Amino acid sequence: MNIIGYAIESSRGILLKKVVLLSVLSVITFCVCVWIFYSLNLERFEEKIKIARGTLRSAVDFIAKTLDNDFGQSSIYRAILNNDQIYIDKKFNEIKTRYPVIDQIYFESLDVEKLISEQYVVVFQDKIRLLFKIHDASDYLPNEAIVVLIDTKLLLELLGLVDIVVCEEGKFVLIDSIKCNPKKDFLSLSEFVISGIFSVLATVLFELVTTIRMVRVERILRNELLKKNTFQDALLEFTKLVLNGRIHDASQYILQKAVELVPGAQAGSLLMKKGDVFVFTNVYGYDQKIVGNLFFRPEELAQGQDGKVKIIKNLHKINEELLNSEKRDFLYSEGRVNQIKVLLSIPVIVKNDTIAFFNLDNFEDENAFTQESIEVAELFAGQVGLLFERIKLEEELEEQRRIMEYYSYHDPLTGLANRRLLEEFAEKIFSLARRTNRSACLLFMDLHKFKQVNDKFGHSVGDQLLKMIALRIQKSIRENDIVARLGGDEFVFLLSNFSTEEITTFTKRLLKVIQEPLVVENNVFSISANFGIAFYPTDGDNLETLLRNADMALYFSKKRSESFAFYSRLSRDQM
Image (cartoon, rainbow, N blue to C red; front, top):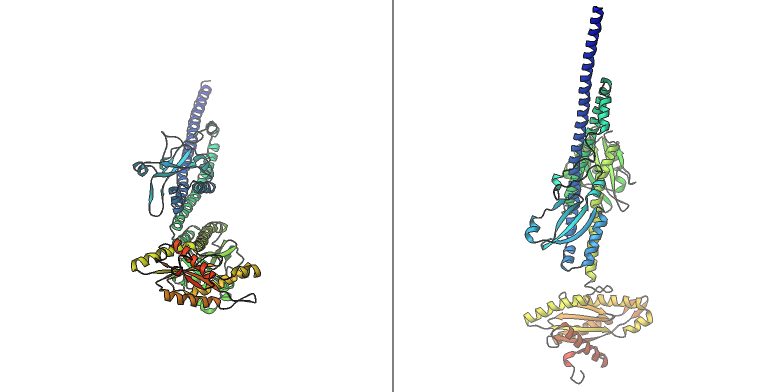
């Protein structure tokens, strides 16, 4: 019995030790599981906060830089100076439409010292506040600033940061020191339960395997996020170069970044449309000698003309078929072209027109480019397309501005000066006459019986006659004189340094030029004219007086059936 009892006691002791050991192992395993859960959740949270800071900072910086360019335009500056509230409201509404995250835009008066010390970007719990000085290219508007409020919650949601909240620390927190809390505790009740349940060895091993797998996935995702942040940084720098007008540097920069970030890319080029041909405007990884010195007609392009993304593995064979020997020899004189194994070509399309090809090359593996390569390359090519769209828009706006400026000073029918240009020119002529003690002469001309031409043949014929006569009289004056059309068939000549005898000779010669036959729609016209002549300063010391007196002389020339009359020779009775 003693032996049996000892054995029983011994078994109990071993069992107790095993139970204690298993209990200790279970506790240790439970603690390890809890620690693993806590460490992973803490690491994930800190990584999300780090990414949130970078992503939010990049997004706000991008919006701020773009808005600073908008608010730095001279048109905004002038509108604020002139209190043009309609234009300002329109501009602010355009900005809010372009950026739905913007909640408010308003003006704020600040003294100079506060304006200088005021923080440029401040993040509150529910709003991000951007402060902009009001300026144009050369001056700042003191004591006034534009405040833009961005909806923090909406911006975080648009950035995909749905489980991050900005927490209040005092009154506000700066964007560079965001302090946030997760929406849930680091360890949930279920995780404690899971840790207890899986305290046995098999469950612990399974949890460890799962944890390792999760860590690997998170590392991959972290690398992807870093790539996205790098891409965002590249876009910000690209935008900065574009806004500064450094177009060539911007396209070269985006090409370089594409080679660095697109999987499989080792060199690249930008083939841009110039007229009817395509020319290398940028290369990276190649000799610059081919830039601007080699062009391809559309039918010579290995990429084709269908506007589709191409992965070309038989580039050299295609070039052999499409290019002549001279062009091919020059292309392949850049040694690395011979080494190309595969070409990834992305067409850049603006308004349904292929204006460029974004090309990336690999020298080692003809299967180097994958679907991921195409997707990333298309993002970069899209930025090039935006660049060219901006250039095209700026060119169109400049052309519209030039046309509007031209017609603000010229008659739209004849192309002669209008009254506005005549007034500005008169100030210069009169000022020169005063300084040099010389005279100036104003001729008021209208065409004889021109209304009858319009009534009989129509305004279309009349307009053609006016344009032909305008061309004749424009050729009859000197470069430093001017002729303007005031409307209808009335023309005004402003001539410098003419004597009475000289202006008489000029008027007769001009009349002879006008009276030469004109042919319009198989009809022959012989148009005559009448002139009224007044001199500065004897007949008037300003344009309005001279116009009135010359018009009076014109009236008397018609009344006396004479071609021209001088205001100075009219008698007081006639006047």
